[in-house]
Image 1 (cartoon, rainbow, N blue to C red):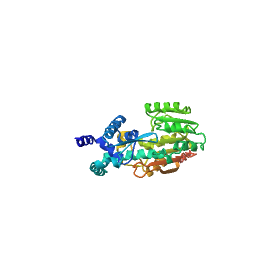
Image 2 (cartoon, rainbow, N blue to C red):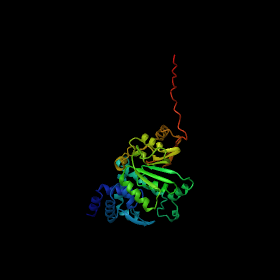
Image 3 (spheres, rainbow, N blue to C red):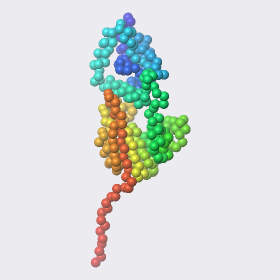
Image 4 (spheres, one colour):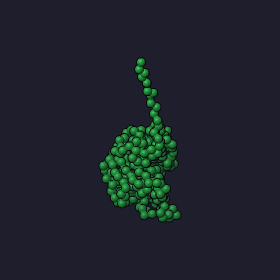
Length: 323
């Protein structure tokens, strides 16, 4: 009867997905929620049932509660079951849903790495070590600038830029995310940011009003990427710069329904053509972040608006000679 209860427990697809993900690495509830796309309450409930059946173990480390597969000593009586599950998991590597889970898993691992996540290893825990601190330090090298964050979302980048910029304008088409952005700025006592509602292809800003235009993970949401970059260039002063960060072309179609992406990233050549086509010079495109096994590679691109507009040759005037 006990075996029947275990197999009944494993008949749920979400629980099988949880076990497959945990066969790679230990994760906390928040991370598992991101990977599976299941509500946190649902993930917690499934983990509770699996833990009760001794199919997952719980441990605390670095201030987090992690879930993992049990130690070998506890799984020995069920080796045939684990062998069966391992064989099943190995056969699913080409399954679309499994590949999507793996893509999100890699994103969670990348996020850990970029936050200097300690993984419970005290040797890796260095007080004050963070990318945010380094970003703010490098910002001290910049002169006072007027910055526009195009497609600002919840405002985290705009608020960070406000630490070194003279003035920041955050533009987004969603009222909800702009409210979150305003609340974030108020919480951090940031006063040099203005929030404006507008679309990437029609910015509510004057010509030549900013020094830097940021597009961070925004271009793949644009209905017309070329028009969006042209708008960014329009609001730049002469010698102003566009700084763009977006995904390299990928095949993860699930991002369309989950995040509303219109484009599955861009090639290096596409980004270069977009920037040069908008009249920018000194265009550069490079890899910003890449991780083995992660289907998402981040590209960074930049370009400068010419100090003097290119002269457009005018047709010669015809001189009329009166007889």
